[in-house]
Structures are given as C-alpha cells and as structure tokens.
Amino acid sequence: MENSPNPLSKGLTTDELLNLLFKKGYPESSLKRTYHIFYTKGQISRSIILPLVVKGERTLLIVDYDPSLRGLSCGERPLLAIARIFFDPPPYFALLTNLRDFILIEVASQKIQKGGPEIIPTYEELLKYNSKEKKPYRIDLEEKILGLYLSGG
Image 1 (cartoon, rainbow, N blue to C red):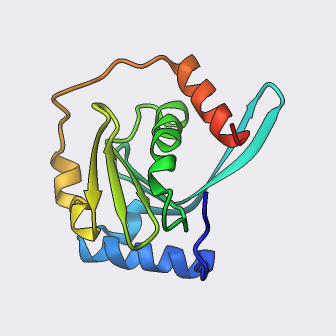
Image 2: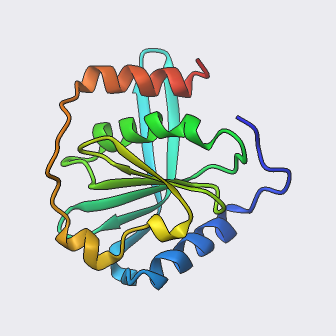
C-alpha cells in the first residue's frame, strides 16, 4: 500500500474521526478509542489497532484508518475479516477511511458504499439498524484472508 506523503499522527487521526462521529450524533460514551486486538495464527503474530469502535448494547461500528491515497480498497476484505473474527456478534458496519475517502461495509451482507463522510450512518440510524440480508461466512476462511493480508501476501 502506498502511504500518504504527509500521514497524520495517530492522535490527530483519532481526533478527526471523533469529530466526524460527534457531528453524526454519536455520544462520547459509545466510543472506544484505540481498540487493541492481538492476532496469532500459525507463524503470524500481529497487533491490530482500530482507532475507534462504537458500542451500544453490542458493537455497532468499527473504524479503521489507512493513510493510503490510492489503495484504500485493498483494506476492505481484511477489515471485514476483523469484524467477523474478533467481534461476537459482528458489528453492523465497518468503516475504512484515509479521511478523504470513506468506505462503509455492511458486515452482514458485505455491501460496500464509497464516498465522503456523508456515508457514515448517524448514531440514531445505527441503533435502529436491522440487516435484512445475511451472507454466510466461514470463520476459517476469514482467518486465512486476514492471515494473508497481515503477512503481506
């Protein structure tokens, strides 16, 4: 993946993401900052850090930041795998952004929406969300996908 020539610091990135979510009505109490996940499978051991996770009675949305200005789409499938492997039940949505472009993934159906910050659902919409379509998935395949991504393959 290509990195932005002027990548933002992690603190500034999280602040920008928080501001976007606050504008969409997300309460401070629903936001978990710097969410750490540790992945080990075979010879791969990696720490994964999501800048934000939105929780209600369950996990509603996970947010990942990638400074890439060209290859943001490369992170779609691994983020979906993270949502399915590490969250039970999986969150409703996964959001991938470089703060210029946004990709919103409906986890249950794998539907993808691309655009600007306007594609981020409001907190009210998240609370009322009900997926009508669910694609089956196998956790072992999700682990292989994530493992390939984390190993650089």
